[in-house]
Image (cartoon, rainbow, N blue to C red; front, side):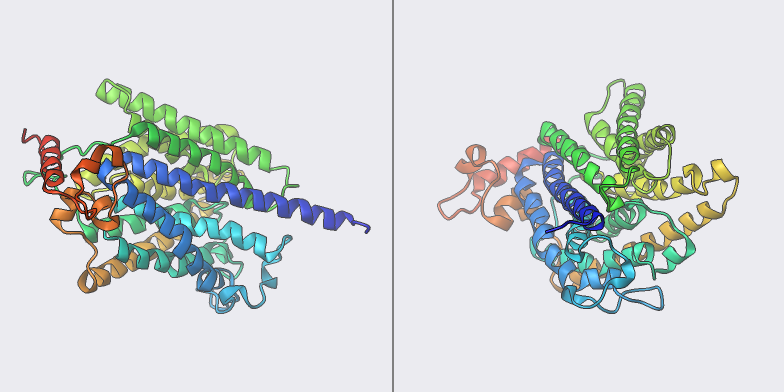
Length: 440
């Protein structure tokens, strides 16, 4: 069998996209470790189960209707009207790879949006309603925002919005959806006092959170360079470099900033600072120089620290910093394209046109995600309920929602013969809460 140059090129591109899809999917493991490490041990299994829900139910939702809404044919620029279950024509996308390869890559993006929200609602949201939301966000909320930005028929795409790998379409959507969810859900018990002061509910395993961050950083080499959709695109090397430098700058600046402000470098902020740099450069990684990527990452490294403090000030309880990392830094990253891009950016052209398009685009997808998520959470709240009881929150969601503790060697003595939390566990958890709130 004779192989043509074009078929060989298509084969290389297909392998490249499938490899990058695997890297992006591997990021779910990073999310799971990061979020589990950032919260208390009694809820760590529950958060991992929510990440699994995104990978299972969320993946099916994107296959059933999400991909069709996102990439189907559309004349109004709002949503695709064909392509459910991957049926129908997608010729307008002009793909140089098989549709299935493109789908699996995009599906990994879709479930990442849902997983961003899972961390923000950790430690108090019921598992059942979360399953409903995971399906909804992958089947409708993210696909419509993605359609606007990435479908050739999308109204923002026609305006010229540039979002190479998703600072706006993925991260801002997930981040501002997280804010809406948190506002409806309410803060964790004991997090805030009546006088407005805040109590620290410490992470149970920061080394695990750090490992998760490294896994996410590694997966980003699929997230950003993979969005080229071609292993023959020589720009993928620059994309990898700008991605890496932004992460390094974000972590460095967060380290130095917290060192200066608090006298000690804050581990959680350094972890999130690196992630903030990655989020911020995701839109512009293909369009900016390495030096610009460092500046973008450095700004994000400060923004994430300030944003975490701000959301605590307004009592939007986010245990993992998802709103700050993805919402704030994703928004900044979309705007950074209009400033630093070598293709129409303010610094290179002196024109505000691209910056204006970027601002409109990120505002549109963010407002969409925020309002629809708030509506979905409110409907779930008044129908099936979204929050566990005070007793279940005290005992821990691992036991109450799943019937088993994540760390059975430590907590097995506090579970009765029926696998239910014993009185001893409740007393232990009350004591834990009292320590956190300064009552002991």
